[in-house]
Each structure stands twice: as structure tokens, then as C-alpha cells.
Amino acid sequence: MKKDPKLIIHTTDPVNAEPPVDKLLENFITPQPLYYIRNHGDVPEIDPDTFRLTVNGMVEETLELSLNSLKKDFSRHTVMATLQCAGNRRNQMIDFAPVPGEVPWQEGAIGNATWTGAPLKEILEKAGVKADALYVEFMGADDVFRHGENVGFGASIPINKALTEDVLLAYEMNDKPLEPTHGFPLRVVVPGYIGARSVKWLTTITLQKEPSKNYFQDHAYRLFPPEAKAETVDWDTGIQLSELAVNCAITFPKNNEIISEKKITVKGYAMSGDGRIITKVDVSTDGGETWTTAIITEGDHKWAWAFWEIGLDLQDGEHELIARAFDSAANAQPEYVKDVWNFKGYMNNAWHKIRFITKN
Ligand SMILES: Nc1nc2c(c(=O)[nH]1)N[C@H]1C(S)=C(S)[C@@H](COP(=O)(O)O)O[C@H]1N2
Ligand SMILES: [Mo]
Image (cartoon, rainbow, N blue to C red; front, side, top):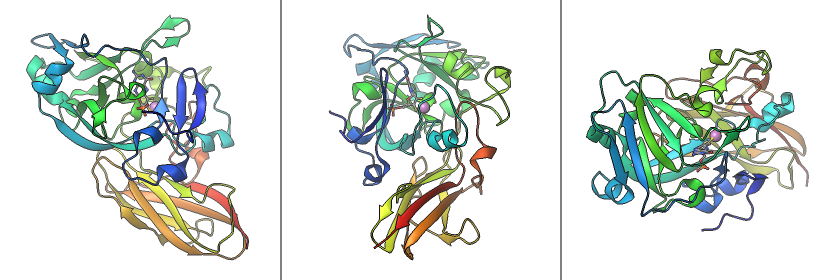
């Protein structure tokens, strides 16, 4: 299947692209052509007939599973889950201070899909996890070069998360085989976690005592405070990102848009981490002095985003609009980008503020 020509292409080698958010909000389940692509290397070509998934490390029995075995010998389980890149909304961090060398994602590095595959739990049970195995490492087949070395792309999750029923080894996305860019023939889907943990082109699962030493678990995807600097920071002090924070975005109007109507319906999405649902979205047109609660048009799905909207009747002129969301653990978003800014530009979940003009 082809990608939508309207995708915003950030880089072509490797491909990094996101949909325009007004298109993204047309469907609660994101069609594959509009689904963002976040690649660190070239898409590997994998022959599904000779493909084997290796499960090794601290297990009773090492497994070599064919795609056919994954489909036939384990349950076929479908989960609706929204993946969100840790770099989503980085553009507003860059507006505050530069984030060199990272993709300047707007609000579209997020997408919702139904994923079908074998529950990781069942594969781990078949292999027999040893008692002192605390992490599950995933390795992909892609070549990824950092500092002249092929480090590949890997990640890990704690064993307790790995043994929950909705972590999948997915071979289908929206009822069709995975597309090559999204991980064909097999990818991990870790609902509620940053997208980077949902390893594509999965080839190896390793049970181990420690989190993965792969570059993308051990070094990148760590969260630092605003005052930390790349040149001097002690990398081990950064938080290894896992669960998503509560977040939201206004998708209509767009920042700096000029609109010819006074009555508009503001739209957006909201998302939280690890199964927490969105309980409320507030909108302010007076810089946060007063707030009106938006209508959640679709929500309450454990691993998925919520869509919201609110009608406004505006005077001609320039407007500032702010949105903020709350989740079922009563988490709120921070007000200012400056308080969450970090030199890698991860997890921007500050209130979403935009400006637009209405004139008739
Ligand atoms: N093997 C591999 N898996 C990967 C990546 C990658 O570059 N290589 N990118 C990760 C990141 S950072 C994200 S946000 C998601 C994006 O998934 P998508 O391209 O299907 O939207 O895949 C993750 N899995
Ligand atoms: Mo990502």
C-alpha cells in the first residue's frame, strides 16, 4: 500500500514522515497510508518463509519460531493501541531552544491502529522464563549506524509489563499484513509506552537481568532536566522513557491559520500512558484565566487516544487557544515548554498553545 502524498516528509534516508493533523483527525483508527513513519535505518527486506524469531537468554528452552508457528500455535489477539513517538510535538520545544540533530516532529508523530498478533506472554510461557529474568529485550533486523558502528535497533521492557496480555508480537495492522515500513513481517506492540519500545522487524527476544544495553535503550530515549547539556551530562542519570505522559494537541485550527468564520469547532486529540484513559480536556481563549471543558467525541479505550472538540463563537481578530488534558490517574499537563524542555526534545506534554486569526 502507498503512503498518502500529503505526508510531511522530514527525512528520506531514513524515512521519517508524519501526516498533517487535520487529515489525521478524520479517522479514529488511523489508515495505514496516514500512519507516521519513524525509522532509524533502512527498511530491511525479510523473507517471510525463511524468517525465524529467536527467543533466548534466561529461558528454560531457546525457541526458533516461524511466522506460521506464531500464527498457528499461539492465540490470535487484537488490540487497539495508539503509538506515539517520544519526539511528538518537538517543534514547540525547538521554538523555545534548539534541539540539534533530532527530527522536528509536529503533532502528527502519533497514530492509532488495531494490531493483531500473538501475545508475547504466551511465547514467554512456552520458552519458560527463569525466575531472575527481569527484562525482555527486543532486537530488530535493521542496520542502524551510530558513531561509525552498526548498533541495530533494540529496546527492553520490564518482565511485569511483558507478561500482560496486550503486549503483542504483531503481524497485522488494521486487519492487513504489516507493511514493510511498519515492521513486516513481525513487530512488537507495547501499548501505553513510547513508540521506540515497539520494535519493528523483530528477530530476537532475550530474557535478561538488566535493561537492554542497545544504544536506543541505554543511551538515547533518556529524559533529562532542562538544565542538562549534551556535552557534560552523565547519560546514566537520565530516565529511560517507558510509559507515555498525559498529552494533548489542538489539530484545528492550525497554528497561524487564518479563518473566515466566527463560529468554529476546535478539534484535537489527547493521549495518556499505560492504560490510563483521558478524563477531561479543557480549552482556554484567555491565556489560561478561565477554561471550558471540551466534549470527548470518542474516548474510554484503554490503550488509545481520545478525540475531543468544542464550539467557539469568536470576534474578528487574533486569538490564542490553549488546551490541556487530564487522565484517570489525575495527571495534569505542565503549563510551560521551558519546564519540560530537554536537549533531546522528548516528551513535550506542555499545554498546547496556538495562535490563529479570524476575519470575515
Ligand atoms: N527496528 C526498529 N524498530 C523501531 C524503530 C526503528 O527505527 N527500528 N523506530 C521506533 C520508534 S522511535 C517509533 S516512534 C516507532 C514508530 O513506528 P511506525 O514507524 O510504525 O509508526 O517504531 C519504533 N520501532
Ligand atoms: Mo519514536
